[in-house]
Amino acid sequence: MNKAIYGAAAAALALAFPAIAQAQPLPPAVVAVVDTDRIAAQCTVCAAAQQQLQAQLAQLQQRATQLGQPLQTEEQALTTAVGALRGAQPDAALTTRIQTFQTNQQNAQREVATRQEQLQRNAAFVRQQIGQRVAPAIQQVMQQRGATVAIDRGATLAINPSVDITDAVLAVVNQNTAAINVNAPPPAQPPAQPQQQRPQGR
Image (cartoon, rainbow, N blue to C red; front, side, top):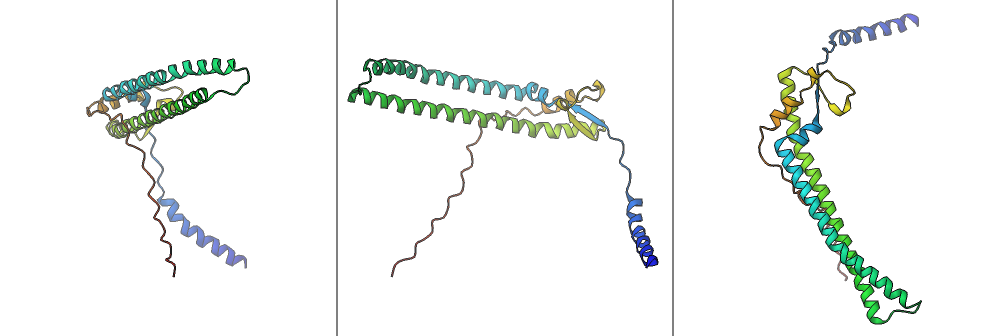
C-alpha cells in the first residue's frame, strides 16, 4: 500500500515538475506615475470643455433663481392671505390661486431636476472622452520610457520626480486638438415590450 502511495506521489511530482520548471520569474517592474487629474484640468481641449460645463452650471443656477424668486414671493403672499382667514376655509379664488402656485412649484422643481440630471450626464460624458484620450497616451509614453506599470499620482504617497511622466502624457494628449463634446446623448430608452395578442373569442 505504501509503495502505491509513494508511486502515485512520485508520478504527481513528475507531472508537476515540468510546469514548475517552465515558469519564468517576472522581470523587475518599471513603474511610472501619471497625474491624471492634472491632465484632465490642463490639457487644451479638456480645459475648454470644463469651461463650457461651468457655463452650463451658471445657466442652471440663473434659471433656478428665475423660477424661484416669483414662487417665493407668491408663497409669502399666500401665507399672509391664509393667515388672515384665522382658520376659515379659503374662498374659490384663493383656492385656485393656491393650486396654481403648487402646480407652478412642481413644474419648476421638475425643470431644475431635469437640467441637473442633464448637466451630470454632460460631466460624465466629458470625463469619458478625456479618459479615452489619456489611456492610449499613457500607453504610448510607457512604451517610449520602458515602463511596465503606470500608477495614478493620487494613489501614491511620495514619488521620485524621475518616474513622473505626466508632462509627456499631457503633450501627447494635446496633439489631439479635436474639441470634446460637452452635450451627452440622451439616455438609451428600454426596448418596448411586445404586446401580447389576446386570443379571439369563439
